[in-house]
Length: 283
Length: 339
Image 1 (cartoon, chains in turn cyan, green):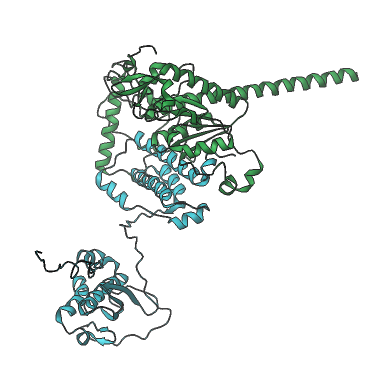
Image 2 (cartoon, rainbow over the protein chains, first blue to last red; image 1 turned 30 degrees about the vertical axis):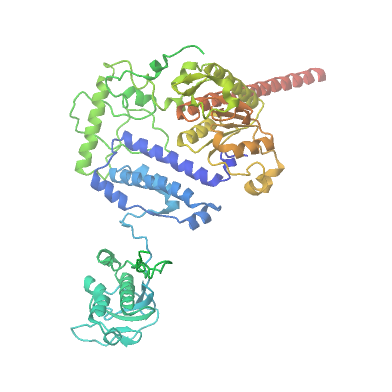
């Protein structure tokens, strides 16, 4: 057998891993001798934020053509992350040859972007052929499906899209735009008679300042009034992310993207209810 | 066992006068390029050093070559200031290096020396073994009865391993490896669980080079006995098993040792006092929990195996030369006979 890693039964993986580790040592040495390490904090931060998205486990399996485990990928990604950050340092320091050489080598494992990706890994729903976004929300035993469409596609709040099917332009509604909300094909005020529930549902739009920018259609089932209202609010927040992903910070800070995990606690044996005990008897 | 308690002297180093990490001579000897030191402390001009080209070879130390042209992407001011300050300090240190202590980073013991600077079996001393902590066994409660012949005594409720026997057995294992590789045998180095042990296994394998394999991380069960399904059926046709396996920590790899026995592969292993030395063919009683000991022993064994490879290459070169000469002589004889 030719390869020194033959008996590990993972030749291809170790070949790549060791190559990357040796490359890392080399790049480290070059940067140390140029005295550019460590870089100032703000530059280090911007380099760290520009971390590229590496291949997933499935994609690695296709590339390397054998079964790679999650822990194996994690180890390789740790080395690649370190390499990417050092490559960023080399780029900022003007060491062009080193930067280009190493980027070329690690480019095969992911996309090396210069713009900040800022941890936005979640794939937000695309708009469909009519320009609608979709979000799913839940609370207690209620589930909601929420669709959102821009009231005026020319507004900047609406994400631009190319409709494959031509749509007739919406009727111009004048200077004041209003949001129409239909829940289970009923107007909002009819379905949710309590003001508190209606306010819960509109809260994502208020917090992001998008009242009037979108029309909403929701289908909700299961649970009771409050559960359904919160489910719609949760789904609405996620649908907003489809149109305006930059609202993520605002929405998550308001807790609107978080699916409340609280459910009714089960009754236990020896107790009247989940927590309530029976009347204590002295004898 | 000779009462050598001076082992501390080889490890404790008097701190050098100045850190010698970046001494000019040391950097140059390692193939790095250093900026030419200037007599002025405040040197304003510096050029960011570009990395080299396709294969990233170490740049030759030609400080006489013209500096690379300043790149268009210049450093931000704060960073440039720091880089300049670091270089200035390095130059200052390099200037005064030769006037300082003769004990420098090069001449004193460093932690990575046991891994990178391996000794040959004949050069290894008991003091070196003790300095690495090879003599430290476990408490008597944990000591296996079969290991007792290798215990020298007890100190602070810990069993001390007899270094005389260890050295002899290590040399025996080393000579076995030399003979093996001289005859063209292959060696498998196994080091698992601990980072230092894994590195030692890989380094040992790389040191031997030809026909040397290593397993770091994990021994996949069945790699010898079920090789057809794990490594592919095509290798079953040939002779794929290694001719010896060196276990740098046999205790967590008992399944692997069992596989070696089934496959009839002789094993060498570093056995600690809590391990039965009969599980391996050539036991080396030493402390397997100390990374330095493992590095030291792996280094010794790999140097011995490399020596065998060297002898085999030498023998082959000589044989080819003889063959060439004999062919020439035969051709000459034929010419003479024809004439």
